[in-house]
Image 1 (cartoon, helix red, strand yellow):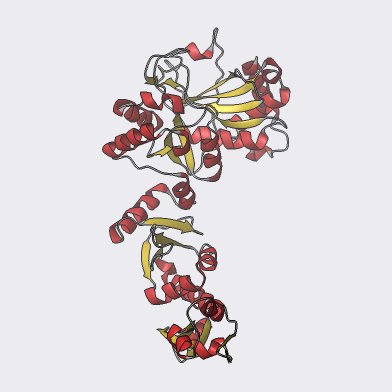
Image 2 (spheres, helix red, strand yellow; image 1 turned 90 degrees about the vertical axis):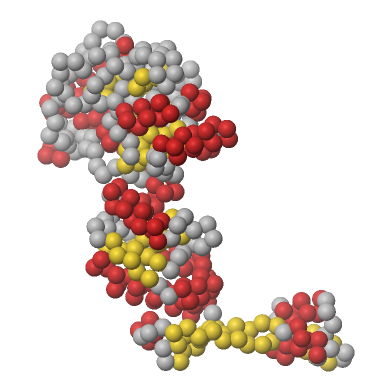
Length: 430
């Protein structure tokens, strides 16, 4: 029922165009063939034999014990025993970029009341030689026959156009792969095979290789919150032994729009320069000729000491890559494209100077930025008759106290220190 609903709208759109979408923009130049079969699609092993197609999209229904109106995308396979088509421990070739493109469209086009998400890898067919995936309407006859749902799926498939993405496999999560759906919607991540948390114990070295190979994955994502500690430790060990790149949500977000090969290059350069460092990318879509830009540690340290949160917030608006570790939110080495190095250094020094001037007591002498710090000297307080205890606390808060009948003001027990930072061309940054 769902398949016929979707196909009916596909025929209509191919003939008449998709409403609200300009004709010349509505579909990439693909050749479509429609195949109808007897029996359930999950048992169609070998359906790609004898065809010159390079992609199969199964248009079908989704059923659930807890039915909800939903449009789903997933690839097929069995990490364990085959209970609904296909073979044991067998996976069909996935199409991560296409799945992502269709999913993004489904999220935009889903009718009111319908969700849109990935599903984990499940059921057959598995004996296929070309990439494939299912697009489904769920989860009862009412939704399967819903014209708006059929129209949404048809338009999502016909207008799908894969863009820049990072093909991944993922381990962990529930059936509807909510976390992977959100990540794909906000990053370059394009998931192929996704393994349900309950099936992760079935994943061994052979299955890791099969999941990655069938997905053409360049890295693996793990839903840490969805796995037990023992499963997590075992999977991490397998991934490390296989030499696979592991990407978490934070790193996928940090990559931004940088192409994967460029990101790997910069990541490798950063870790070679500062072992254990991570990188954060902001405001860059490409970095073909990466160039290091070094900032004086003294001025960076002073800016972070003045107001680290404000500095980091404004740093995110400067196009560059910054390095960080668990101990330091910003290291004094940055990366930018070769022709942007001079501008980056100017912007970074300006940010440091402005952060310091706004948040500290400062003065300027030529090319020196002077930071003045006042603090209480307990020795002076004791010398003026202030006993240890609450009175010292009041003086530290800037409040006067009476000691031995004498009024002691905070300024009487303070010492002033100065830090001088040399900033060539300082006047141009003030």
